[in-house]
Image (tube, rainbow, N blue to C red):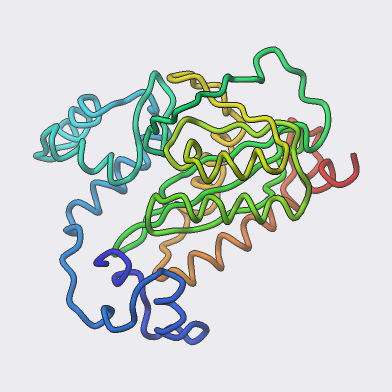
Length: 274
């Protein structure tokens, strides 16, 4: 509740407090209670960890702790481990998994080793990343088409639950259905609800191998682009502002941003023409 309340902006002219509470799943009455959230110092450390992770995704708790100590901060392993978990980040030689590992009854193999990606809707994938805010943080999930790099859908949430990932999936399905859908083995994507939705759409499920950095490389590149070209350049003050900026950025990314790997075409040109 404390993180949700911190993200509400009572001066927002577009969304009322009632609408913002509904968006965050927060009872309006609880907005008026004074929360005890993360300290300003911890939020600052989370910002540093977020930026360093893009540079050194193989750094786990010990290396991140040592790196902060070298910057002159007094921290210990216990504190950094808790913050990384809160951010949903886990170093796995060297891939950063931003979803908490799940323990499903059935496991699905990685289907893309040696596969040539040659058409739109052949392979989609999804992942989650952390979005910093002045008084808290959000999580961003996106669904991307591998062939075109087109971002089919995205959603923001203040918790690492399954529901916002399912919403992104449903929105992506308004475009088409992929032949293969690839995810990491996070609890959101290995949940029964998520798996059943993919199976009901007759989509083949592919899971990253544990600790394999390149199994979901296209969305990892997307996160790097989003962070460096959008998130790190702005200081979102509210959920509404984060939504607005990200909506504008993803529209630019899909419709205008030229990709060298696409022979300097945009993702939309490749996705919709082919």
